[in-house]
Image 1 (cartoon, rainbow, N blue to C red):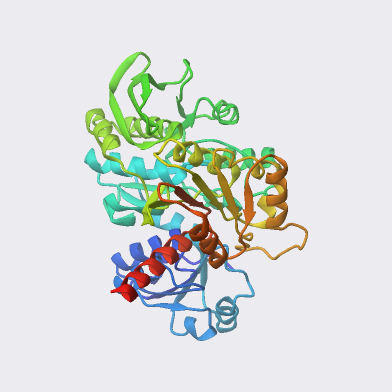
Image 2: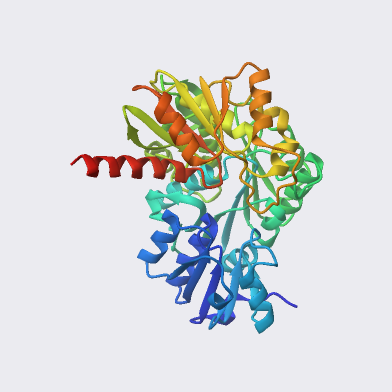
Length: 469
């Protein structure tokens, strides 16, 4: 059966299964703004589902066959398996269905400038930076981010049809549904090994994505990443690199970091200064993200002074080293990092912030990832004083029975890391409240539902205050 096209359903009822996901919730808002009637369902009540209801989009918690009744088209994410009751009912009724990545690709069609940001790490932050820079430079892009950026009011922005900016996710090779004219790649590392065979298979998928670029298009890549450089050398389009290396087209000079790890530098292209950037977000990786942003904006002839100023105002996307509040004098942060490299990177930033003890709360994500990257998990929280490990978040997978969170904890202890298994959110909160001290810093990490632990602790604290009053 051929894939239906969203434009054939203009003004009709679209039901979205898994609407609470970062990408799907953004697409829901985008479709509603374009005149479609939207409904959705999800397993859990979250801030995303509540926000969708506040914007007039009905969301049902729980997947039930009757949720799809009356819909003209069903959209679903790759995490929604064929045996989902709503997908089963859709098939029984003969309803047309479309997967999230195909829907995103169709919405990008017709854009003169279609920018896709890909890579193993840093996609959301880099896409968010580019969005803020292009808006401030007056390019008025339409934007779709796999996260939430206050600057654009959420995960999407409806701008001109001429410029469309989006994250390009490599999982399940979904980014091959897009047709970019500009592609940015942050790095290539092992991940999503439940889908890819190995790192060479991953690199080949990125190669196929970049091969979608037209000859007059632009490929922009991290010039300090050997796999990225090898990929760029194979392309028959305009190629630009960014990074610290002397051969990179866009690089920083006079780079310094303040006490909290925020970079300040001059952006230089082939020896010529394009402007000065003083970041408000900490971490060496954000310097790379900023350089990628400048390179991308440069291809669109954006005003470099405005671009650099926009980078200096960027305060980050939600769930990216986000301060969620303070309890008992303890600052609580959350970060979306869900593989060892990302967790190690964010802890390198967390340790620079003022604190007595640094607590890392890890929610391992998917059994396949933990199994394939097991050794890296055992040392990635070394910068923390204490690590708490929750049970593995299964996401789209079934428990194979041969990998447990307790094995991670045992391996951490063997590597000299102070680690404790706290299976549930209740267990984790109880351990934290029993042992933390004023002046400590806690960071929860993961791309599952671990952010809800922060919400839970704040809600419990608010309830205590009400009870005391």
